[in-house]
Image (cartoon, rainbow, N blue to C red):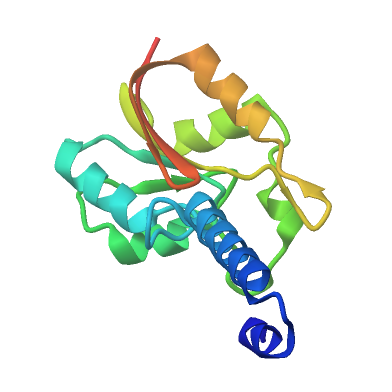
Length: 168
């Protein structure tokens, strides 16, 4: 479309400069939005590879939001099991409200039931707080992790984070 303007206007130089400016701006926007390249939100392929390289057996993996377990299960082939927070994903009826955290005690009950007596955990958090007007209250997970665990290691991926945790 811009090339047709060049043919019909007398000021071809100005149109060419503006075309280059718009193209360069588009490229910058794409790089900022989608960096690192080829990563989807959560970057679960790289997360899985990282986990399998650094984990040891009997280190359960806390996952929030719970639906991330579905993607991770496809990519991850390590020895540890996932603990979806706040509960496993219901596969019969999707309920967005079921992903929202209610309290620290809710998380504690799920972790204690799934991994009693474990000292070391991994946690995977995806970077989003709400969707379609539903607040998932990720700050409740932060409060739970801060009050009960020391962060031994932290690694960021594209819109997700992996924590290696040890009980206090």
